[in-house]
Amino acid sequence: MDTRWFDGVRDHARRRPTAPAVSHAGPAADGSLPDYTDLSFAELSEWSDVLARRFAESGIGRGDRTIVLINPGPELYAVLFALFKAGAIPVVIDPGMGVRPMLRCLSAVDPQAFVGIPQAHVLRVLFRRAFRGVRVPVTVGRRWFWGGRTLAEFGRGDAERVSHPTPDPRPVDPAAPAMIAFTTGSTGPAKAVELTHGNLAAMLDRTQALTGTTDRETALVTLPVFGVLYLLLGTRIVLPPLIPSRVGSTDPAHVVDAVTRFGVRTLFASPAVLAPLLAYCRDRAVELPTVRAVFSGGAPVPNTVIVGLREILPADAEVHAGYGATESIPMSSIESRELAAGPAQRTGEGVGTCIGRPAPGIEVRLLTITDDPVRTWDGMVQPADGLGEIVVSGPNVSSRYHWPDEANLLGKIADGDRVWHRTGDVGWIDEEDRIWFCGRKSQRVELGDRTLHTVQVEQVFNTVDGVARTALVGVGARPRQRPVLCIELEPGADAADVLARLRAHGADLELTAVIDTFLVHPGFPVDIRHNAKIGREQLSVWAGRRLDGRRSAGGRFERWHRR
Image 1 (cartoon, helix red, strand yellow):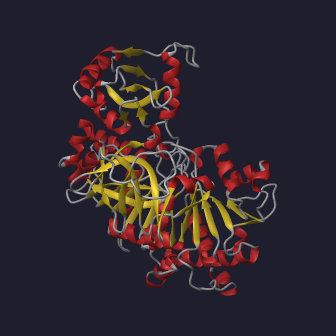
Image 2 (image 1 turned 60 degrees about the vertical axis):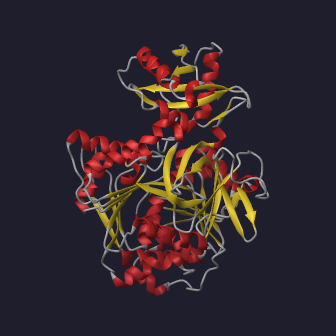
Image 3 (image 1 turned 90 degrees about the vertical axis):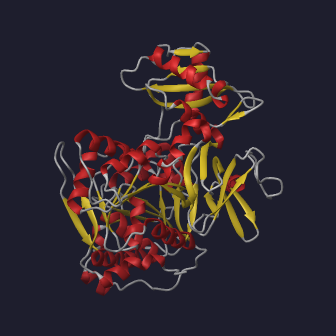
């Protein structure tokens, strides 16, 4: 294994110095298309070399945890590669989780350095107790009323490279921490995932194996951190205008423009981008003839979107629905043709959603469903009903959490010299070694004599005309909860007609016949970033109040029906 996996950009700079590495969109006025600026591989390599030396001189040393809060753009990649070269540990977080949770998480890692935009430094100053260990603040942009240096003051060109030579190219320990990345916290408390140099090197290898990308291609990326992997593979990345905390607000017209302008061959995007893009292209009869591969990530992607994207792409294009987590990227994938050939239709039968076969090097087991720590495999594998918690192991799987400590007890299983990661997802494995996702373990509904899993149930009802989406929740305490199906209606749908169809449809299947309470909700709580992960915990509280006859915060009763 190459222990200096992050030197890929330098290698590409030597071979193709003038080739564009990052094409970044500037601000776009309403209704207009943005202008783009390019950064070459040579410029990115030199800039990150200069920053690595400047960071080290400023006191950012090996092992120093360094918060990185920078908007998507060339500066983000220059800083990340510079920190890797300097031996520091970048700490990245999803800004969509909200200010208070983000502050709590960042404080927990006890950072020694802070590299961020001015708005991020305002938070650092206002909540100084959370960042009392920060010795080195660096501002990306204009420094206001705090101290430290700005990124611009560190320079980036040939003169700085000569006077501040390339950092010491000594090997790194594959087991040493390379990055800390936080989970989103959308289905539970956010956790600080420790990724080693070995994890990231393996992640790079598996990304190349999965995507088949080359150094002559262009990829459009709406999940910016994934741009690091593409750059290391020598692929030019295009960053359209987007707001990191609200990826779902990305204008599909800007995506189409970028694909057309740069001849993009690979799209790596959140479903919050892909679904509106498909709708936009359908409405305007737009096709994307240069695209040869689409990969999704960040949140579950509806089968209808994965299969539907084929309508706007060339016949030989591939569309992959990926499954992964911050702790393990990637875990599995399935291509749209295989999905459409059978698994997509079975989803409506209540078997879950097919998420494909394990990625190369990933081993998958099923663990008997429990909320307790698991210290040994004895009696815990091969559940009798075929359903279990999905547990994975492999070189790209993080073996520990930096924070909180109890997450290691509940989320990891030691097995000799290897560690297994408990995903918290429930699923089963079919005769073709494909994984089927049935729902989050924490969101299961226990009825006493049986257990319902959210995705299995919801996919049955989501096929009913007039339904935008559904969410199964349990009201009351386990193990005797009351199952309630919350419904979002399509615009213009008649609630009474839809409820009647839901009752009839659910009664036809043993899995769903037990559900007798349906509530129409005006708009599900979802994660801000992807608008895809439903806040079932909040819906459970809402449903309980409705069934108790209490008024909602808005002072009105919601429609509900009990069979």
